[in-house]
Length: 240
Image 1 (cartoon, rainbow, N blue to C red):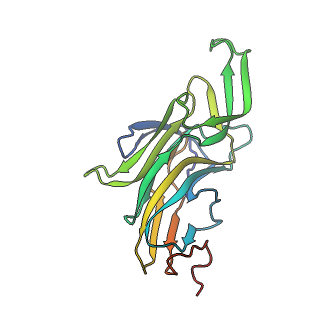
Image 2 (cartoon, rainbow, N blue to C red):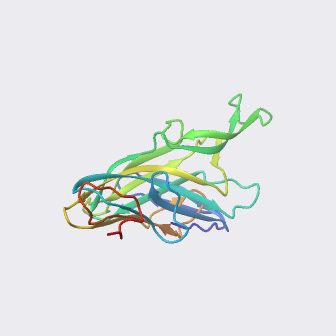
């Protein structure tokens, strides 16, 4: 999980790995933001990393995961996040098979100017909630890609950058949790061996309007040594 402390307005230039370019972020003071990578459909663990354990046959296995952005402590009447830039790194024993924003729908607040004239203020419609697909090209920015090290081009994970609509005012609800990215990892499991892999957040992460003193929760994926054809959910890996 990554924490973002709001400060007095300051401009922060964000550079993303993987050739996704730069995003301008502005910082304010007080609220806390966290990022967590979890198995798809699960909530982050209350404390520490989120663990996924399964008994699987040897071979390549896909693990679906999600990145959850949570805000807390935002004063009443203030906006939630308007954008974010995230790099999720992973251990060498796993690789990124797919990254997507398409179909990732978040609940937002959207202000629509009915006559497209910014000079008039009496024709602005507030839509709350407005359900926004993060893969929709109507957004000012929505990028995904493989994240690489600055030198050498070695892939270290996945990267995404999102900024809500620019002509209209749009933001996530404050003090809420939203899935903001979906990933599929591929893990190779050898016969008779336990495979322990993890994904976590790289240092470069920002939420628009906030600086990055991140607090992060990682995802740990473990395959246990059990009969090759038997599959088990978390909690049974220690069983005989």
